[in-house]
Amino acid sequence: MSQENVEIVRAVCEAIGDREFELAFTAMAADVEMCGTVGGIEEGVIYRGSEAIRAQFDESEQAWASHSLRSERFLDAGESVVALWREQAQGRASGIAIDIEPAVVFTIRDGRIARIQPYLDPAEALKAVGLEE
Image: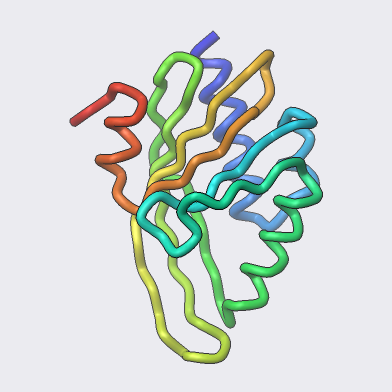
């Protein structure tokens, strides 16, 4: 089941990276939750359901003049999968560029993504699922 979970997450990450959000949502539970990034300005915020997550994606995209988000590695953690990302963007209004390598913990339930928890620090994501490196 764990390799199957990795493949589910890989497909969702590719869809998100390609801005094919509707395709990504087909692999998510109806009650999916996406949490604000641990260590980020939205830490503690929770978006519930695909409509709320889509609205957050749309709002986020408006902030960037350019934005690239790619998964570089996936780590099996049983019912969760950790995706290590490379995110590069340039602010639309500020012009400020970012180049970061965050991690996202995807929790799988019944073959669907039930929870998405991003972390600015990949070590914290690994610790959260018991995969400290």
